[in-house]
Length: 116
Image (cartoon, rainbow, N blue to C red):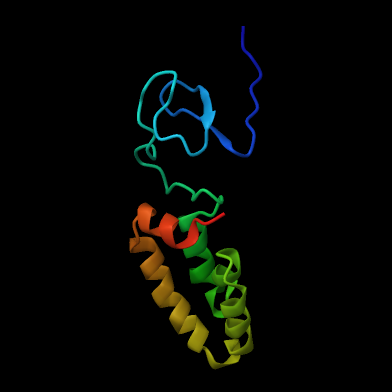
């Protein structure tokens, strides 16, 4: 018999046993397995739900308009990118930020952009 399980915003499923646990839990209370990003995942999301891969893609495709800055909550910088998009300088900066975001570790991304 399959149970219908829905998770709240502050919950996640254990990647080992599938139990519903708190989103910030480092160890599943049911099976005791440490909660890390599953192998071969495209990147975990920060506690606030922001994804490093999504931010990098925004920087690559729409970075000249500051889309990645708006996505990451840096509205002031997003407006600056919009104001100067005609100079193509924000596009060059966004390309550099795209590379930085791709090479940044998940822990560093969470520390820098993972605030709630």
